Length: 108
Image (cartoon, rainbow, N blue to C red):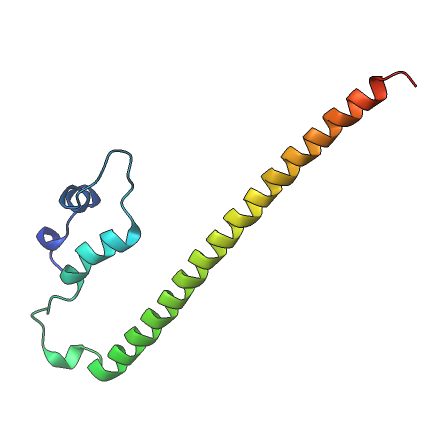
């Protein structure tokens, strides 16, 4: 790949419409950059690997990546649910401690 074919992250980010405070996702960057990666090079075909083998390897790696991305999303969602539950339990704990302090302060 020649130097002038490579976009900087700043160039790619500028081409993606963003709202204030919104981050550029890796997927958006990958989608913008991927056409550059797949440009054919002007070299003789003897130096290139077998396209069917590399294509199969690419598809296998892509499938594995997508499965890992889906698992990461699921784990992130599960983590947020557990964090929300922890916050709820901490709030309940503080409320019970407040009640206990009030009850301990009462004369018998």
